[in-house]
Length: 112
Image (cartoon, rainbow, N blue to C red; front, side, top):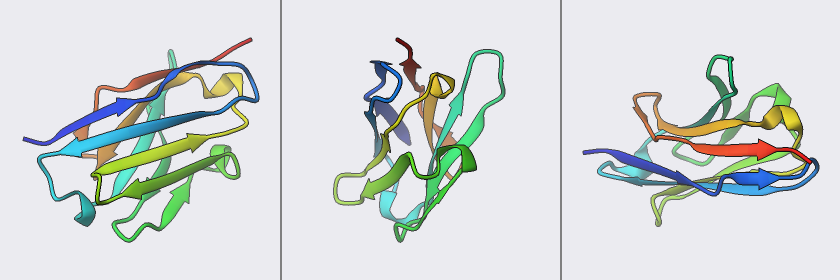
């Protein structure tokens, strides 16, 4: 059974940083494309970033230069380093494997 567990969310001031983690189990982690999505209140879920099995990242335009996606295949864990956070980054952040399996999400709130 595939399980994804996100952690690292919380309240941060504008301009601050957070690092999200996604721990995976029940799947050969290293062979799969992983991604982060987010859903803000009243909005549809949107792609934030993806990373291939080989570690190549791709980002949504609205996070380029601020967020960094990475993975540690030895730990079956994916990360999202979020810097220069803005209030509009407030959302529940979800990790996914191939958009098939999903975690339950972690809430990020950017507010002063």
